[in-house]
Image (cartoon, rainbow, N blue to C red):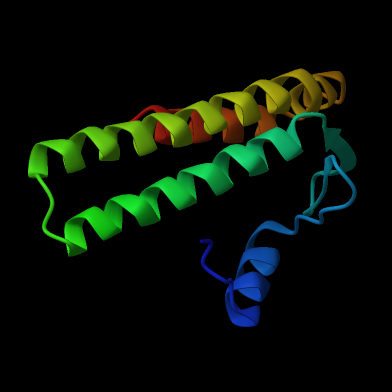
Length: 125
């Protein structure tokens, strides 16, 4: 079972990221004072599916907690959810490097390269 995202949450996400989704691929439009381009992520649907499964798994783990099930089993399941999320992030990172960053390097957009470095540092913490 997936949590419904409210209109307010969706608007906040959209305003913060200026991402637009279309079709099976993920199409982003980044617009700021120094950068603007459109691109597609070929594995966006796979990432979305992985995240949906992780959400369902996490909800099942929450149910385990609510039912007072064995803590060691809950910890194992939390580790599995964490791994699923990390794997989705790896696929997204690979797409980003292979598509978005190629564009950034071609355009000598050093700000985007620095943003990726910051994002990687946060992702691997």
